[in-house]
Length: 483
Image (cartoon, rainbow, N blue to C red; front, side, top):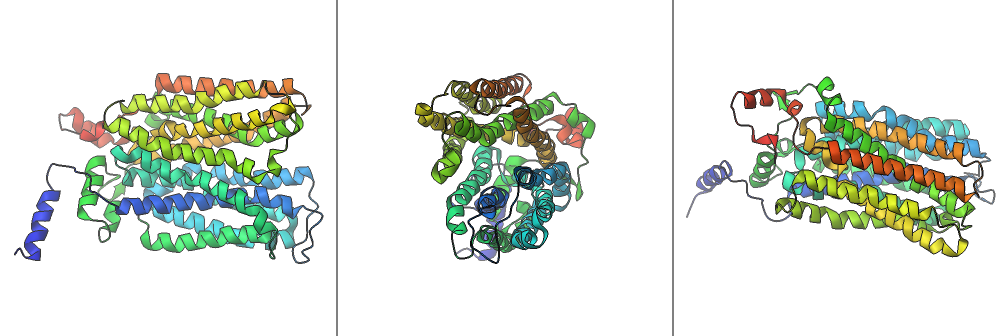
């Protein structure tokens, strides 16, 4: 019978071999996926909770003496609802840089912990500071959450092998839709409970703090940071599959700003991300107004219908992601072709739905309008297999910074798009004015995806690791350049 020492030696020799066999069963990388999924779920629940709570907070029929209703006008409500994004845009790029230096785990922990504590304090801020205090609090929450997507991309660069990149990334970001669906579904029940509308903020705040404790003990910035928890086989599989290191001698690789910002592939990524956000937020923020004023159908009064598009997007993302990885691993489609095919489905599909919706102007066709919106948002999930993981394809060492850059630009579009609607739609009941809005969004969808098809890439760029590129040019093999 072999001794334990001999078995360990043989195991190490096997792991150090040339093969990179995928370990079977549930691994520690899957634990990270679950934790990041829950992180994004809580982040979005804490992001959208104000959108649903503000209805109860300004309800003049409230009978709660401790937290009475607030007489906020439409301008004050708009300031409260938009203030989150003022802070959110600011920390996108710094978030990617900080995640590269201190680790994605630290950034997520700090972000969710602070944001959750502020959620617990929201009712108190409202009680003693009214809407100006809430605006300040929401700006700080936006600053906290601005680091989440860049930090998540930094973690995915360490944890997601190329053969599982689409599935792992999509499952993590599916938390965005899940958190929104859950908050929309339970907000009415919480608002009518004994604690009233404050319970909406208390529940999401407590959930965030519980997650922070779990992530403190079980989260990790990379496989090398949790050698005692992850199996040697899984660690070898991940690191040999990626074959990319994020540091040189313990120091992070300096960000090649000039090469990054002048790369046609990165510029294409910035444009397509911005185009996506313009169309996506036009659909989710303005279509309810269109349906109310033109079709005389108030979708916001129906929690089920309000959550339906998000639910459809979550389901589609869970279906499409394993399909994309299977097609890539079987070499049915090259990775670059796959990214562009799925991105085309995710942007040009909603484009067609928006054009069709522009001609639905009768109250009798409100069901058709709901169907078109649900299809448009659901199909949009295909972008998770397109531009939304392209950052990892281009530069794993700088994926967090890349996500920060593109997401910053994209969220500026999210702010501008509603302002354009306000400037054009001077009569909310005029279907022709809304048709202009839908055609603009459809045109931006079309252009954004077209230039991604032309200029987008899916191979690791030379500036990802200049030293490795230099060695490659000198004749030293660098298998990380493509997968």
